[in-house]
Amino acid sequence: MATLADLLAQYPRSGILWWKLLENVKASFSPQDSGMGELLVTYISELNQSAFCYQTHQRSAMPLGGEAVVFGP
Image (spheres, rainbow, N blue to C red):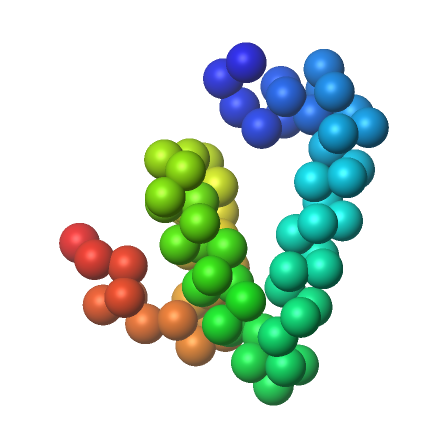
């Protein structure tokens, strides 16, 4: 399984649970600080060495106030 889409196609129920977990983590932050939740998920993706997730969340964090300097070169 090379991508998240492959994983979710093979295990759809687990994908739903994973999505709900991420929604809960991001929702635990103040609504005024949605960028912080996105930065946290981006950081966790980097720790897990998931390039796909990292790049996706990095792109999502930028419009929410994430600065390019946070993500490195």
